Length: 335
Ligand SMILES: NC(=O)c1ccc[n+]([C@@H]2O[C@H](COP(=O)([O-])OP(=O)(O)OC[C@H]3O[C@@H](n4cnc5c(N)ncnc54)[C@H](OP(=O)(O)O)[C@@H]3O)[C@@H](O)[C@H]2O)c1
Image (cartoon, rainbow, N blue to C red; front, side, top):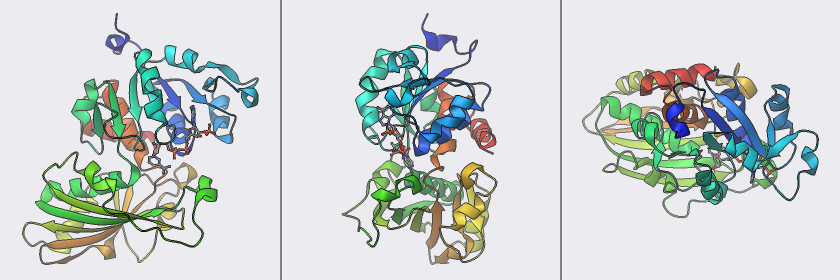
């Protein structure tokens, strides 16, 4: 029998590869959802991210066949052992590595979830904020959109739910590195966008006819990304109408005050690591002129894609066929 047909009677068995920024957050969350079985995590070396995994008794597998010295005494087997005992794989390896592994995953008849560093063509469908959910239910593989595009899609979706959005332009000022990769960052520079960034074509996966243009720069910070957006709506709407719509949208938090990206940590207080999976929008930044609205939003890049990845997992495992219920369950799981 095809093992994917037996999902309703046994727990979906999920392997996770790569325990970096995204992987460690997903592993910790997935192991806390009783309907899922985290079969193990695949890594190349021992790192502090493995501590809660080892303490929880989740097996660790070494994916580097040449070297498992740092994992001696901890490792339960190799990549083949992990993949052959799983139905799904959450690929959280660095950009481009998922594409290298895709044939291996296929050989084990796994269904895959890739992250936004992979190309949109690698997976059978792309998922973000409810878009692509029905396709994900039966897709052999799903790609989660990147952190900035997730922020952008949440805003466009929210505005589109009440207004006709005619065009969107955005400048994305990105952190040069995650906090754990500060050695890779730039100390005193802002790198300009070389033309239009990939975020517009990713957002247009869901609104092919919408005019969307983005530029993306890098700034020497590691606390979040900033989305500065101009949207053109059909008709004239007050900023209060727009704020009401944004406030009523899941995974968007409108906050008061003239703050900055470090607000993400304050909004995230109470979450593990002070993560802020919600997109934040500064109330004062939302202004209108004619048919246009401008706003500024903050993206906590390390955590914003965690709820979307869980949504995709609920879809693929068919534990939840209703997208809104799935989103509610994902949000509950990361509280
Ligand atoms: N970080 C973000 O802000 C962010 C946001 C949204 C989406 N994403 C996307 O999420 C994906 C993961 O990004 P990330 O930032 O979490 O990367 P990361 O922090 O660099 O983590 C990747 C992890 O994978 C490990 N790894 C590399 N090759 C491996 C292999 N063959 N087997 C097992 N583990 C392996 C790396 O460890 P070693 O090299 O030590 O082995 C590292 O711990 C990328 O597609 C990225 O574009 C990232």
